[in-house]
Amino acid sequence: MKKIKLVIKERQIKFPRLPVVGVSLPLDFSFKMPSLQGLDFGSRAKSIIFGTILVSGFVIGGAVYFAIQGIDPAPVYPQAASYDAARSQRLGHETLGVGNKIADDSQQGTMTLELNIGGARIEKIAFSNMDIGKVSGLTDAIKIGASTGTIICENLILEDVEATDFLMATSTAYAFRMENIVADGLSVSPTLSSSPIQYSFGSNRGALNVPEVSGGTFDRILISSNGTSTVGTIEFKNVRAYGAGITITDIACGSVTIKGTESGKSVFGDGTGIDTPSYTINNTLKVQSNTLINNIEKPISIK
Image 1 (tube, helix red, strand yellow):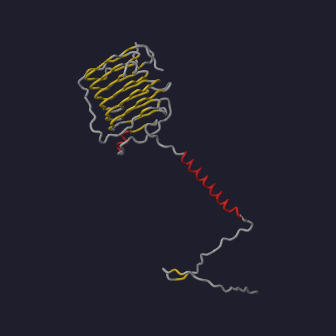
Image 2: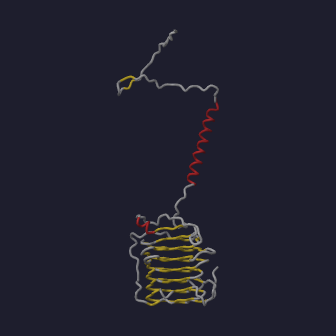
Image 3: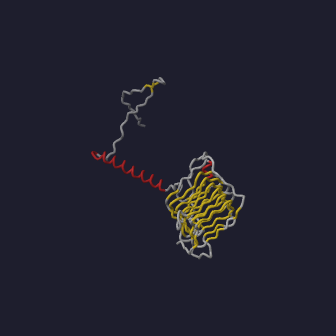
């Protein structure tokens, strides 16, 4: 039987010293990468490395881009959406927070701006220089009302507003003023009562800030409440609507002013003729005082 002879050549090996441990270990961390036979990049090495980095950058950038594209950001007021003022105030926000998108159907179109103020205390809600409406499918272009409780407001102002029709009911106003209204039929019969209160919005401390909306267009604007809420002023100025009208219910105001800055600036009409009123102040609106100035009936149809 042949014997295998193992010959170890003499080599000089140095062991690194670790001063903390105080012992020497037989480790040598110096080594060379093995050469790959048949691969010689030569002067092209830098170009190849640069190209690799560039391609990697494009791949990573594309992945980040498409990841961001897939994120659906929450709408910010006044983008079309539903906003919860009471929730923003409960969370301690000074300004109205982000909203939730509304499903797209005939009544709740994606271009609906809805503000739920139930239980909140707000200094002012204001809209100006706006176009609102939809060809068909809407019950109201502008609606203010409470499903439960009441919206308490110091001042409600509609100035230079146009719509197909107008209804105000089941509300109170300490002082009611209607001036320079032109309508395709008027039915104004508020009930004089001692029950309305002169509300006055006090300090703004702690009140939620709802940014004023000026310009832009929506299918409709909704101000709703599922509880008793308090607002200093609700104001619509130079707002034009078509396709549907304005409904205001369940609101208790210090004063209500509906007017045109001159005749022909506040117009309401659905084209059914003056015998079928397009502008109605229901007898369920209770008022302490009632001022009616220069209001005119004539055939009008807003399209």
